[in-house]
Amino acid sequence: MTLKIVIDTDSATAPYEQLRAQISTQARAGRLPVGYKLPTVRGLAEELGLAANTVAKAYRALESDGVIETRGRNGTFVAAAGDAAERQAAAAAASYAEQAHRLGLTRADALSTVQDALRAAYGS
Image (cartoon, rainbow, N blue to C red; front, side):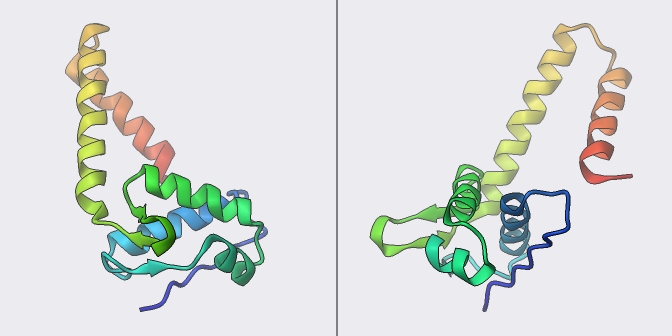
């Protein structure tokens, strides 16, 4: 198992976001198994030609999302992310549904708003 990351310097997407997205995708797809030890911030930064702060920012976002976990001096590892991601998505959906209902939106209007947001996030 190896971490395969490609940073597109011509992309409009920030390098930390490219890194975050690629690690997240690989972890969720099982290409990086639970318990896989990630490179150090400094090591990955050197390997990818990025600033250490860029990699640290991506790692912080991934940890916040429950994709990775830092175990102090032992390193950073892929966590059991699927469950955490699903829980966070379900909580966000429930919160949205409650707020849409309070605002008086019909079920169809609330669903249409979500579909528009998903198209914007994922592309057509």
